[in-house]
Length: 476
Image 1 (cartoon, rainbow, N blue to C red):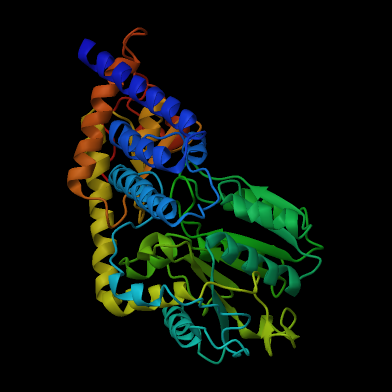
Image 2: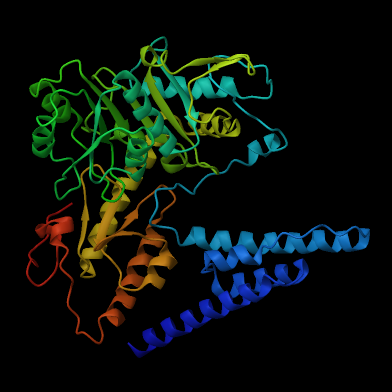
């Protein structure tokens, strides 16, 4: 116990000392900044404060003198080397966010010297010739097949991230039904509510079950309060915090029963799980054979990519109202951003060609298996934990120490935190995490007496190991 406290205090002192060094570095010449970055990177092993780090990277005018310029170049190289070391360590301790950090795109470095910009519509070439549209269209074709929409019936594009996919999908819904009311569960991604604000659409929040899944009884109740307006519905294919899957079939049936036949638009937010569900046996299908309007996924999450990106697919019939001719580009545009990263489609294309269906299925199975492993070992350590069906997001009691949260880059909300078990997360990393949590956890409760906190309202009574609910947890 004393050793644990001493260790924590020492760790805090190192972080504090590192931050002080970075603060002082901001006023130093570039050569000294570079040295500080390397030293602090070694001492803190990646626990740098974001603001302090930003201050350490001051921008200075390049020297005119050739010798001084050469020295500056060497200083910059040392600073970047220190930052690379920092990123390596942070990658080693990354567990809380759904990013697959296991990839090798060394073959694609040959394209870094090109400004590849997929301006406007992926299917209408512009006057700018340095683009990657053939790769982009191939990626879009792959996703359209995955979600069972014919080549001549779909439209889509490679986005900058999952948020843009949601913004576009919900914009299409608003264009189809300008007087529609938006419905989204309270556990939807924040970008959904951002879209409602941006588009000035009335948004009704729907309650959720303990699992995080949309409560269709509450959905029905709120639909019946707005029967005069069409419904624009966001369906979560994996919620942000709990990884819950909204019941698409039940949502469609509820809309039909409430008299919304032909008067609803469904956008499916599949940022992470949208690419996992097709490869899970007995998982409910996300398909355009059902009356949905659009689906979006993130490309940098389950697939893995060095830059944020994503894909949105919608029905071609919905795009005419959004698409406009842009003479300046000699193309059309119905995208959110206009200029778009032309490198991202190449990375996605490369990944799909390297892994294929079999490779992705293998990674999905590995993630689900390792998520079950983590839940089991957390419970063995006396930590309340839960895992939704068909999910790789493991929920558990929120750590009391923010330094621990920062170290493992955990995502927290209310009384719970989560680990997202991605393809790059190994059994060894999970073991190290559980061991670290179990060790630190005893010191957090030392003065109060060790009492397991109750988080039954967050993960269900059957998964809570507090004194009130400490019964044999369900097998996952």
